[in-house]
Length: 336
View: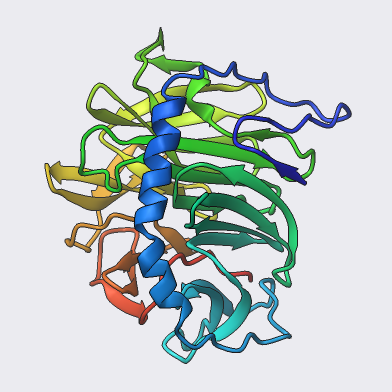
C-alpha cells in the first residue's frame, strides 16, 4: 500500500467509511518549501549519525512479546523488560524518527534528507517488516496506533520546529489499516465550538489518541492563538471542542482518563490528567516542562520523554517522577 501526500486511498466498499473531507489546497506551496528546507538543514546531522556503528538487530524481535516495553533507542525500535526497563535494550530492525506500536501494527515515521528530501509513514508488522507506506511532507512529530492495531495517526510539522514558535503548521493524518482508507490532512473535519460550527483558515490539528472502539478519538486543535481538546467521531467525520488549553492528549487503556500538556506560561507546559466521567483536572507531579505526547505504562502511570531519557509519573498526581529508561523516547503501551 503506497500513496503520496495528496492522494487518499479508496475505502473498502464493504466497510462504512467517513465522509472524505474536501482538500483546501491552501498553503501547500509554502508548506512544501518550508518542509524541504527543514529536511535539507538536517542532512548534515543525519550524515554524522549514519557513520556511527549500527547495532545488530535481534532476528527474534517481536513487538507483541508480553512483558516487554517498546521504545526508541539510538534511533532504532527497541524493547526492554517491563520488570527491569533500565536493562540494555534489545534492538529491532527498524529505524524511526517517531514510532508507536500496538497489537502487531507499528507506525514508523522516517525523514530522509537529501537533494529531494522525503518523509514516510511506514506500516510495519509485528516483526517490523514493512507492509505499506504513505509519502508525507514535513518533519515527523507524533505517532499513535489504536489498541487493536487497526487505526494509525501521525502528525508532521510543515513549518517551524517547535510549538513555542509562532506560525507553525501541522498536517495530521489518519489511516484505517483494515480498509486502506487514509486521510492525509484532517484540517477540514467539521468542527463544533461552543455549540456552533466553527470555520477558520488557521485551524491545525495534532496529537491524535484513539478510543478502544477504533471510532472515537481525541486530538488538539489550534486556532487564533489558542489550543483546545477535541473529541471526534471517525465514522461520522465530525469533531467538537471539550475544553481550552490542552495539547497532545493520550487516552488511558481503560478509557477513563486523558493526560495532556497544559500551557502554564508562554514557555512552559505542565502535564495534567482529565477524568472523563467528572471532567476534573489534576496536575501531575512532574513539574518540568514536557513537550511530548505521553504514553501509558498501565492505567495508573504515564511515560514521556524528558531530556534524553524516558520518565514515568502517576496519573493521579501523587508520588514523584522517576526515570524509566535512559537514552530512550517514543514509548508504547506494552502488550499484556
